[in-house]
Image (cartoon, rainbow, N blue to C red; front, side, top):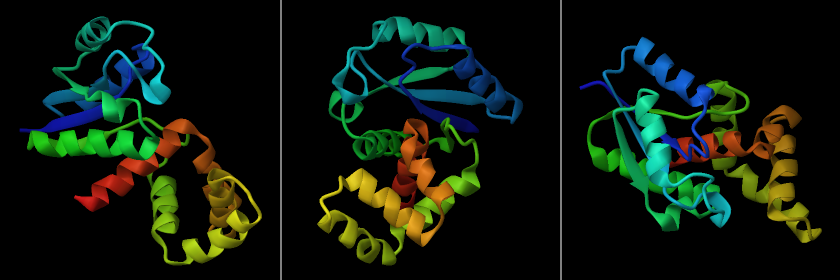
Length: 174
């Protein structure tokens, strides 16, 4: 079975999401499962539409199966959201691929950020910025810019890039 899994909020489902599903079909995926947040989305905000409406829209848009991402993951940080989604995809036992959107649209760039975030040098580069009282996000961005480049650091400023990086990090934990 050739099954692609998309982790999404679909808040709301739109033509870009439908295009993503169509692209997966064109790439030869027979089945498309979506792991979707329920009535609440990241940061605890209520979804614009009820989960049943969003699920119906996704099914009409070409998805075959919708699985609800449990609330503790759906309303959590990007790291927990990614953990919950990737763990569910893995538990399905039939996922051939994980698909997600990002602002940069470049898997190589996202993997470059993953490499830097996993490097042993990150902790040492991060410490002086944290000692200055900077937020973790700002300190991490500066440390990544120092270790890689400002372009790689800029990836950490866009929400879908951040989620994509977290998915890739979680996939390596399997």
